[in-house]
Structures are given as structure tokens and as C-alpha cells.
View 1 (cartoon, helix red, strand yellow):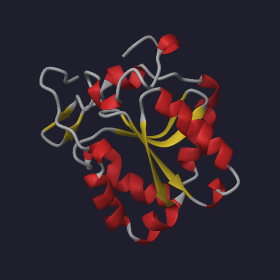
View 2 (view 1 turned 180 degrees about the vertical axis):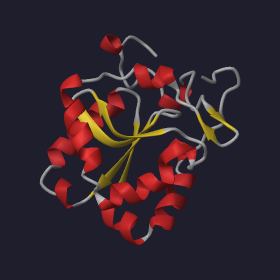
View 3 (view 1 turned 45 degrees about the horizontal axis):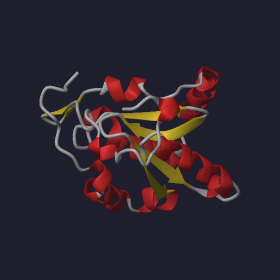
View 4 (view 1 turned 60 degrees about the vertical axis):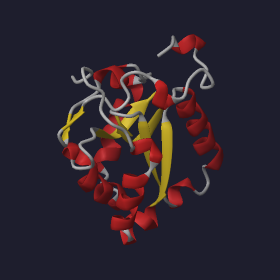
Amino acid sequence: MKNRKNYSPMDEHPKDRVGDCAGRVANRAYRNSKNYKSLPYNPKLKERARELRKANNLPEVLLWQRLKSGQFNGFDFDRQKIIGNFIVDFYCTNNNVVIEIDGSSHDNKKEYDVERDVFLFGLGLSVIHINDKSVKYDLDGVMTMLYNHPALKCTPQKGNHI
């Protein structure tokens, strides 16, 4: 990926970068350290991210049960991942995808959500928004949607496994 300072989202499509989806082998999750470590990180948010993980928001817990430990297509996901000055609900290291569960807490934060999405897109990340009610009442449907989502479709590249 190009130097962050001079990077423009128009320079390349996230799927064109070397390393996308690297680390997925035989339905086992492997961390794509290159993608993971290349993201900006604000250490001041570490405790807040920990609090959010412990808060046990029901839709997040339900989805996490299906994403963790490589259960979803062998991809490696993090929960409450710090990216820059934002904390995202889920981040997939294999293909640079952020999943956000949107509930009532997002109702009065539309501008914040847009600002976050623009920032994440500028880093070459894809963002998938899912309504919290869909997770609570149609988790199988959500998983089917994710399974078929173009941002989560890829073939691991040989030789790039960590």
C-alpha cells in the first residue's frame, strides 16, 4: 500500500492490493499481520475498546459467536478494533473489511458515522452496515448476506500466509 500521507482512495481499489485475503487456509484463520499493522492506531482508545467488548451488546455478541476463531470462511476478525480515532465493531484482517452493527445508538450520530466511513474508505477499507434488529431476529439471514457479500469474497493468495 502507498504511504498513508500521500494515499488517495482513488489510487487503487482495496481488492487490487497484494495481501488481501492472505492468511485464509483450509478454513483456519490466520492473522494477516501486514493489513493489521498498517492501520493507524490511537492508544488512548485502548481502555474504551476494552469496555465496549465487556459491555456485551447483544447483537455484537450474537454476531461475534459466528465470526470468531475463523468460523466464518476461515477469516480472522477482531471485535472493537481501534482504527485511527475510531473503534469499529468488527474488522476482518484478511480482506480489510469493517462490519458495523447499527442500532438506536447511531440514530443521533449520522454525521459521525459518515465521517468514520469516509476515513475508513480513505484507508482502503470496505464498510458493511448491518441493522441490529436483523442480527437479533434474522442472524442466519445476516450470515447469508455476509457470505455472499462481494467484499468478503476472495481466494487466498499462495505464498502470503503468515
